[in-house]
Amino acid sequence: MIAWRAIAAAILLATGPALLAGEIPSDARRSGYAFMGPDTRAMQDDDTANPGMLFVLHGEQLWKKKIGSADRACADCHGDARGSMKGVAARYPAFDKALARPVTLDQRINLCRTNHQQATPLPYESRDLLALSAFVGHQSRSVPITAGDDPQLGPFVEQGRELFMEREGQLNLACTNCHDDNFDKRLAGAPITQGQPTGYPLYRLEWQTLGSLERRLRSCMSGVRAQAYDYGSPELVALELYLMSRARGLPMETPAVRP
Amino acid sequence: MAALINVPSKAKRGEIIEIRTLTSHIMETGFRHTADGKLVPRDIITTFICRYNGAEVFRADLFPAVAANPYLSFFTVAKESGKLEFEWIGDNGYSSTASASITVE
Image 1: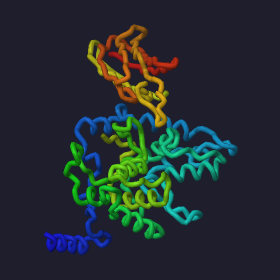
Image 2: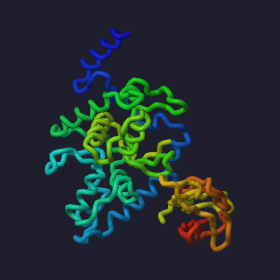
Image 3: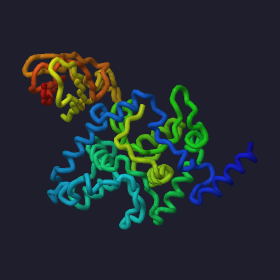
């Protein structure tokens, strides 16, 4: 068994140059959508039944609203989001030169607010921040994910990968134990997915609201009885970056619906 | 509040049409407590009404067990061209409206 794994790993290493041992090859990557039942799929597919679209509508209003002491709206600099924001979310988290580290889309929105609109940053998971990132993310629907391609992000992707592989919490589980080794099986009644972050921020029926990838990661961490990292912490950003690079090539679905 | 309405823009006279509505609301049940033990007051939509050219064609009462962002789907007969008006009424004086037009041939 171990020998076979080693051979399989060697084959994987030989075929895909960027692929590391244990990683899911690009043609076997599947969005959480593929693990859902027909009812939840139908809900995501129909824009008038997808509750995430309510947030997109709200985000569209916020996009045009003048705020802060600069009295500027997002649209005053970025124009029509349908053109200017297309594909942007598929590249995030992206490297910020001034901060010399990657920032998430939520953090980018808040940086724009503080630096260019002279407005107060929005709290993580607040309705307005989720609505804005859902609106921006929606413009990238069906665009393939390319986050992590920037060579400056290399060390941060590696940091995220290490966190993904590291066992933690009282249950002593790493992300990889479920999402690389045991997807397609079930944890209690729920299917274990590959953990591909294709549709964030997404509407989770369990939450009855939209939520970010960071919220999802934190609930996985409390699931394995670990102390969850704070919102916006470098560790969560690195994990988010690694997950996005791990989902490379999968189309964006924002706002997705998940059970 | 934002609402998403799905009404066919065109229909044949006498045809049965499906109307789907989704509106934004937290639907706080009134049964939950905060971390320090205080009851979170109930805040739900209690009534939904659909009027077709002024005449009521569908009405629903909603209760705390209904999930956030209520989605309602129902049917009516396309009788004449005109306007479908939707109204959501709830706790704390909540009221929200939306409309859609339909052409009947």
